[in-house]
Length: 433
Image (cartoon, rainbow, N blue to C red; front, side):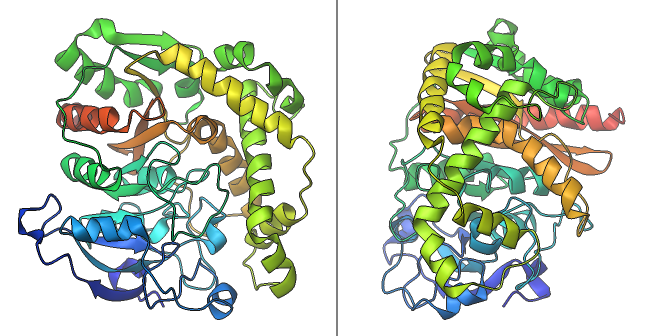
């Protein structure tokens, strides 16, 4: 059970020692934590719910992703708390407690990889494994003020990991240090060390930044100034992403409703993307877990129960249209970015909400966040969330996305830019901005 010490981040603590030949290895002497969705030999993988833990036996092998980190010299110190059945980006768990956000103790930590993000933010470990289906690495990284990487879909093995919605599930990780973020990625994806390649363009999605509750200059200036310093300012381009997506993804028309057309509160085409992603996720979740939920009728927390039962009752209506949306969006963004192009968007649109806030406005806020989170979700692109210090005493972040399979390029780019970005953030904070 999560204890009060350690910020409530851990389900259980244990030590998995690195491989004996670890001295020369890239993760030697680093510690890490594992989201309780990965199998560890001899332990029940709890999936955030006591009824799940009760009805499943202990794992008889350890997930390959965890083994690869141990072989590279890292030591695991335990399993972390997650949202029930990984079906939330809030980070609150009624059964095991909500891990405390070290960056903003009265705010939610973000989920579902809440404990992993908190363990890194609180400096309890050097890095931590999470997973990201709808936003479960990117959101807690943003809310806890740390780096979070969602790799391209299917580049990190999912064997020994409980699926949530398989065509979205991505095995991500958190770190405070961009060098460690990069090293972990190279181990998990078995990437060679290569010299960094300069980006061909950095596209700022103007409309997405204008939608943010944080002034758009506060989010984009540290990035633009750093790019200018390192690569020259002519790399920075601007786009109205919503208009581009609307034009290039005709299948989205099916998801354009009165709700998504509310221009004041959202970008209609991206809100429609969010609807398509969430429908497909519900359908896939049902395929994996519908039978278990219907049979066991687990004890689920408020909000979680409605969400999970809604998924269990989903039909396959419009699922083919969702798949067409995915294909069209991937082609459109591949064309927009070209080789070594990068898209910049806010990770989320608001600072972290207060703990135990009213579930109805919270749900609305999170649905709005999905309009941005669904871009990498549906394309399978890689995305990194980069912390930008505090605004109004709350953590803020920016995200960079690159094409599927460009993970090594994106990790190198973050490592190159990070120091400059943090210097620019420091200047902005000193100005009280």
